[in-house]
Figure 1 (cartoon, rainbow, N blue to C red):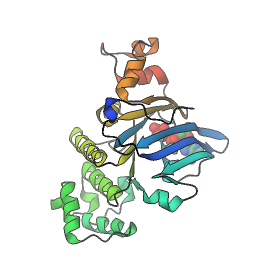
Figure 2 (cartoon, rainbow, N blue to C red; figure 1 turned 90 degrees about the vertical axis):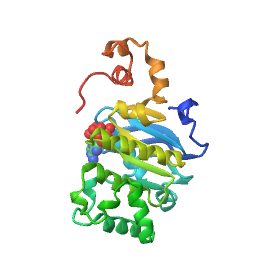
Figure 3 (cartoon, helix red, strand yellow; figure 1 turned 30 degrees about the vertical axis):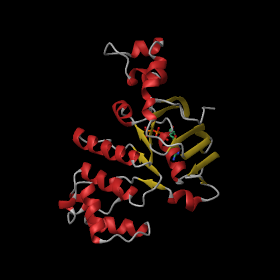
Figure 4 (cartoon, protein in one colour; figure 1 turned 45 degrees about the vertical axis):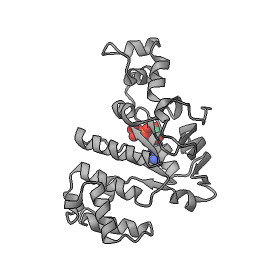
Amino acid sequence: MESTMPATNSATSSASTETVLQVENLRVTYGSFTAVHDVSFSVLGGEIFGLLGPNGAGKTSSLSAIEGLLKPAAGNIAVGGYNLKEKPLHAKANMGIQLQSTSFQSELTVTEIIRLYAAVYGLSLSDSEIEALLQNIKLETASSKRFGQLSGGQQQRVSLAIATMHKPKLVLLDEPTTGLDPQSRRQLWERMESLRNAGHAILLTTHSMEEAEAVCDRIAIIDHGRIIEIDSPQAIVDRHRNDAEVIRASRKGKITLEDVFIGLTGTAIRS
Ligand SMILES: Nc1ncnc2c1ncn2[C@@H]1O[C@H](COP(=O)(O)OP(=O)(O)OP(=O)(O)O)[C@@H](O)[C@H]1O
């Protein structure tokens, strides 16, 4: 079993001591197939934590279990101190889940969608609060545009704003920047960092090593449903820079996180 205690490193300096998400011995099965084997990790307030892994490694299955969308075969998940099994409503009230853009009604305007989801969270937002929210995501001039008319980056910003409007302790993002251009990706990274700096815990899945290095304070590399490394990106690179497989994977004369990732998970294409 991996240690559930975060390693100490300079990248986690904004992290608080509050464990916002605790995952212990999580197991997810589909029939007789075990997709996630005894996965354990924790995420602190003020920390961005990334789950990295090849296709089919078990990232989405782990996230879905944490979101309460699928029932784990075994293990414990606690959010904000509330056990998801025993206090599901309390645990879920502490989570903000970024929905895919396709989940939103494309014919509604941005303001209508924000009002709709505010109501779902039991929030009543005044016009000036909605205006402030739109300003915050630089969409003040797009309030009456239909959601379907927004660019991918704008849709992602609305989606993240909705996921965080009830100020959840834990924010869950499944491949949040896939398909975005570099400008939109940078803006989203800045939003994540400001959430982190405001004390939220952020758990994201990503295939991007660049993203992991740029924004994640710590990462877990998951392969075949098991965590094989957990630490800050730099500490993981430093720990494996002399591994023969990592040196073999190196392409640019210096060891990158991607080289370590390939060295640890292999070069075989996953289904
Ligand atoms: N509903 C399902 N029924 C059966 N097997 C499933 C189901 N969902 C996922 N799996 C399998 O579980 C394993 C983990 O899948 P999961 O989607 O969690 O991986 P992932 O790391 O998110 O992959 P990707 O990067 O491709 O999104 C894979 O082998 C996948 O085929």
